[in-house]
Length: 324
Image (cartoon, rainbow, N blue to C red):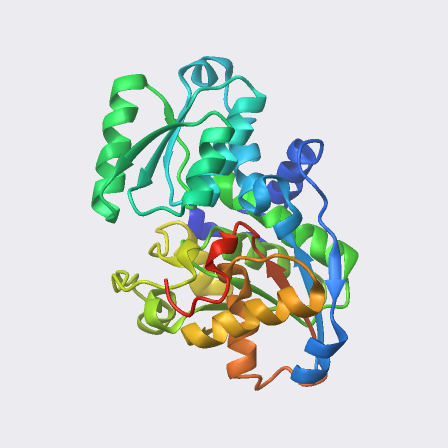
């Protein structure tokens, strides 16, 4: 199925299959887990694709690896640059480091300490900026001008979308009887890649997304048909505070059926439920889809619902806190 919305830059699930071939040596084929208690609570068969077990602790390793390994030799020598609050930053630093490619990372001054430490560990050269989208973008542009590095946008890049879509590709291969696929949504790279994969299946798989109620720009964008700015509010789901992308939005508008919302307290409850019952560590952003279903389970009774747990980079000192 072709997606003309990306102007011939990412048109078909074949791009995602090609990305999977390119990166499979370097990333994990993450496991799929179930939890009887969660399934019983929601009266549905809930299955989880555990990207919290992925390299660098999040699905972002997929897109970053695909992007870095798509560079030609001359571009690779000049390095890569991005702006990110954490998971994409760490993933790009890691993927670049494996190829001896310089990685220049712009991070907001309020980025989580655990994610700053990860970028440093993987050898990324960090430049801090004010925690606004405009500051991130302008700082990134300055570094790009100074170094000649290639911009690897956190989500608005066909190479990134294709790489993130490999998580859903594996999911439908391992669970071909899914009725519904659900991801969190921030910039939309994971969701867009998932939608492309889902719509390529002979048996149509519905695609939903979840986001925090306090930063519901993706839902408002879907309702209005025009990308809406972020609210500027904070959320415990810090990985979802970016606005939806110019490249990802047309795919989402065309192929995502529904975006559901969750309160901050429910996100924390969902995170705690996963950690207590499944015995795995997930970050709040990863718990958002489950939280949305806990608040509004309408339409999933008796269905097989796949949820991509997007990451597990959580500062454990935050356990028990109800707000950021």
